[in-house]
Image 1 (cartoon, rainbow, N blue to C red):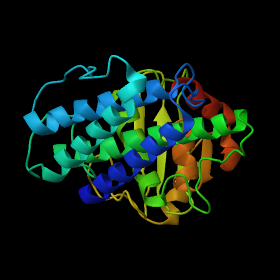
Image 2: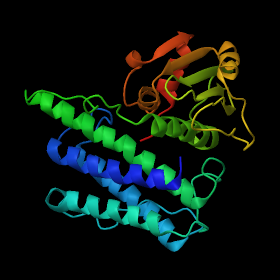
Image 3: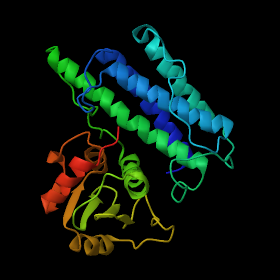
Image 4: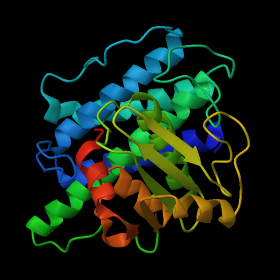
Amino acid sequence: MRISEHIHALDRDGERMAAAANAAGFDAKVPSAPGWRVRDLLAHTGRVHRWATSYLRTGNPSPAEIEGDGLPAEPDDTLLGWFRYGHAALVDALDGADPGMSCWTLWPTAPPAPSPLAFWARRQAHETAVHRVDAELALAAARRAGMDGAEGVEPAGEPAVPPGLGADGIDELLAGFYAQRHRGLVAPRPVALAVRCADTDDGWTIRIGPDTREVNRHPTGTAALSTTGTAAAAGTDANADADANADCTIRGAASDLYLFLWNRQGADRIDVVGDRSVLDLWRDRARIT
C-alpha cells in the first residue's frame, strides 16, 4: 500500500472509531480488551496518536515514552474532542511530512515500509483500524445488553477491514512485531504456521522455536517482497509448497485472518488444517494491545 492509502485508512478509521465510541458510551466494556472500557480505549489510542505525531514533527531519533499529553482531568467531559483533535493532528502531520524525513521507528525500516514516513503511516493506520474494531465490538455488546438490536462489527455487506488493508496489516504484524520485536512467542519445539489470504493470494509462513522466530512471505498480492527485501516466489505453487511444510495452515478472507491474528475474533470464520496446538500456541502467546 502507498503512504497516501495508509493515511486515508487512518483518517477514515479514526472517524469511525470516534463515532462508535460515542454511540457505545464511555463506560461500555470492550470485549476484545478485557478490563478496558471505551474511555480507556480512546485514551490509549489518543496517546499513541500524539506519540507518533511527536516523531513526525520533531524528527526525534530516540525512543520516547507514550505519555498522557493533555488527557483531560475529567475524561468524560472532553475525551471525545481530545481524541478527535489528536487524530486530526496525526493525519495532518503525515500529510505534511517531508518524504525524506528521519526519525526513530519501532523496528528498522524495510520494504514494504522503506522509510520512517512510510513506517509511521502504516503503523498508525493499523493501530487505528484494530482499535476502531474494538470500539465497534463495544458498541455491538452495548446494544445487545440494552436489548436494542445488536449489530456486528461489519457494516452491511462490507468486511470489517478492506482486503488490501487486511493483508498489509497481517504482513506488518508478522514481519514487524513478531519477527523483530515480540519475545514471548516461543515454542518448546520448532513449529511452522502458514497463513493464507483467500481473497488477495498473500501468504506467510511463521517458524517458531525455543529461541527463533522467522517469517517468510509467499505472496502474489499486496506484500510483494520477502523480509530480506528480495523478490519472493510468486503464485499458488509457492504457497502450496510452504503449506506442505507447515504444521498448521490457516486460510480465510484477509479481514477475518487480520482480526483473528490480532485476537479480535475467533477461528470460526477461518479454515484450519493440521495441528491445532500450533494455533493454540499463537492464541496463548501472541497478544499485543
